[in-house]
Image 1 (spheres, rainbow, N blue to C red):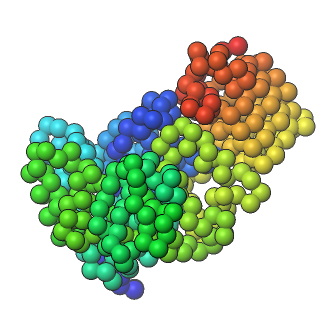
Image 2 (cartoon, helix red, strand yellow):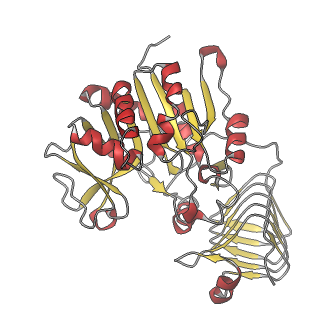
Image 3 (cartoon, rainbow, N blue to C red):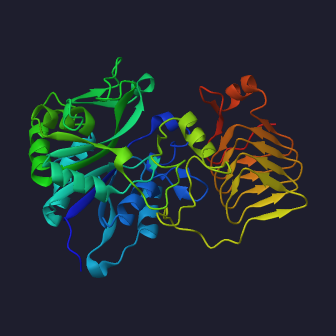
Length: 407
């Protein structure tokens, strides 16, 4: 058996995801369905597992039942080699309190690191859509001798103010400052129109992580956040480096989807990321069999199109029936029924939705088990929709889980 670096993966999956309401009203953000077949957490777990990192703890907290169930029923690895993906709820090991921040979540879960005794700890976020080989980042981290390496993705400076931004020294490798949503984002050396945006993925040398967590826990003025407190602490010590995501090469990637990364933290970003999937040459290609996005596929029959039903530039999940209806530029999840005469365009429809006859739905997100009666219209009159449903800044209409649409 090939011996490599001993790495423990920790996935931070405890966020409330308030900007995704109503999709997060009844579930944790990483459990939100995505792409017709998956949940958001499947992307980070697939990246870790595909790269060979197969000892992973998922730290959960907020409304975690469906997330815990998904992990335990889907991500079952062979115990023969000691591999595991396990959800770890807030355990109140340090007293009767929940996690107060992402750094506190790891500090309260130091028993995981003490038990595993890894050389390195990969701390990754749970709710981004992307492909990445973390092992290439680990190799860069080992070569640099850093205490922490932060994955950075190049973004236009004009957009970087929306994110945490990494400023580097002149060599473009050592981090000199870590800035949260700066008004004037610093440029990448040699690329004046680009900035490094933090992807929320960190690779720590274990001893450095433990020391930083203990120091942070003793600081009463800290908010105990990985990006806000731990990374700046190690930056000040001169031992933080950036890993350029552009260097990451994933098998099977196309020129179009290479380097794709989306933070789907808002309803508009969630909708846009779905629209990235459905073109003939998709901006993000789910059909890469050399680096698959893994999940639990239910035993449902194939999708069925009857009575002239059709779908163009769309994805339709298993068990769904398009009966005399027309679907365009949409992602239809599994076990969805769309009846005759209905028209859907630019929609994201989650499992179990039922759409009656002669309905018109444009630029909408329908959560699980939504019912759209015969003749209902959604996304046609936004003023009316705002009185009835959630409408995003760009005009995407969102119906929460189990809602019956108004006529």
